Image (tube, rainbow, N blue to C red; front, side, top):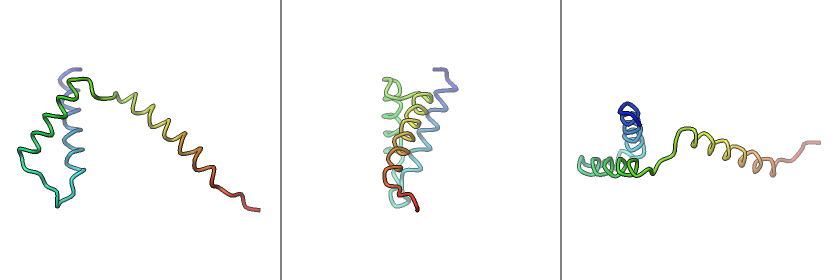
Length: 77
């Protein structure tokens, strides 16, 4: 993975971390940096999925949800 891709992944992680905290759950800079370090370590250890893998997972979820939602549908007479 090149530097631009790494920066993009880190920015995505930062955005995710910021969006998952409710305003009452602000964290301090030390905790923020710790979470970023943990996320980067996971990335370095290969603990991530590619964009293509995520798209495939989403397709599977959509198929599953489509099958499940069809079970409870009653036809009108």
